Image (tube, rainbow, N blue to C red; front, side, top):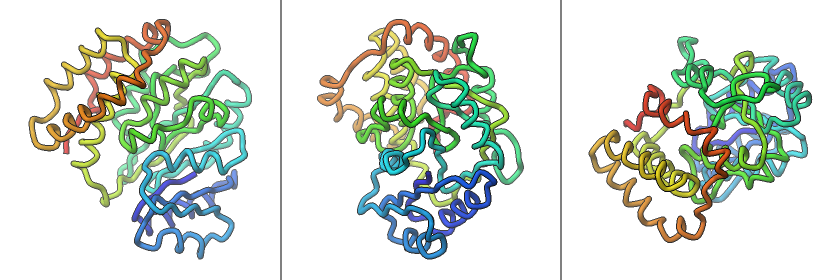
Length: 290
C-alpha cells in the first residue's frame, strides 16, 4: 500500500512501478488530502487501484486505513518516493509464512540516484538486539515503514500507528508494542527497497515532529531512568534553534496525554532493547538536522 500527499507525479510513478512487479500485488493508495489532483490522476491511469481520498492529512494513520482495506495476511508499505525490487515481496511472503513469529520484515534500503546503501542499513545489519535462534536475520527494535512488510494480524493487534504522533519516527512506538505482544522484527538483506528522496518536503517540520515524537515515545514506553538519559542526550545533541524549541514545546503540551497513556514496556523487552541506546548515540542516520 502507498501513502502520499501533494506529490502527484511521484505517486503515479510509485503505483506504476508496483504494477510492473512480477508479484502483481493488490495496490491501495491512500491520499492524505492532496490538492494537486493526485487521487484523480491515479484513478484515471490505474482503474484497478483502490484509491482512498482523505479530506485531511492524517500522516501515518493513512497506513492504518490502507491496512484495513486489504484483506491479505501480509501488507507491504511503500511511500511515494520508494519502490520494491522485483522478487522482494515474494520472498517476504515466503518468510512470513515460514516464520509465524515474525511481525515485521525490514528490507535493505538503496538510495537513488547512486545506488548506495542508506546509512541506516549498517545499523540494521549490525543490530545489537539479541535474536532468537530461529529468526532468519538480525533482530530489530524498530523499523522503517516505507521499507517494510508487516503481518496484518500483528499490526492490527498492536493498534497500528498512533494518531497523536502523525508522521515522523512513528514506527518506534508501534515496534515496541509489536515486540511487547510477542512478535519479532527482522532485517533481511535480500529484500530490497529503493529510495529517491522527494524534493517536495519540509525538512524543518519533519525535524520538529521527529524530536517531539522521540520524546513522546520515550516517556510513553521507557522506564524512568532510561527516559531521563535519552531526554538528556537529545537536549545535548539537537540543534539549538527555533525548530528544536518548538518541538520541545509541542512535546510539553502533550504531557497531560502522556500521563494518562504512559505504559512502560515489559522489563524483558526493555532489557533486550537496552543495547540500542548506545547504537542510537553513535548513529550517523539518526541526526535531527534540517
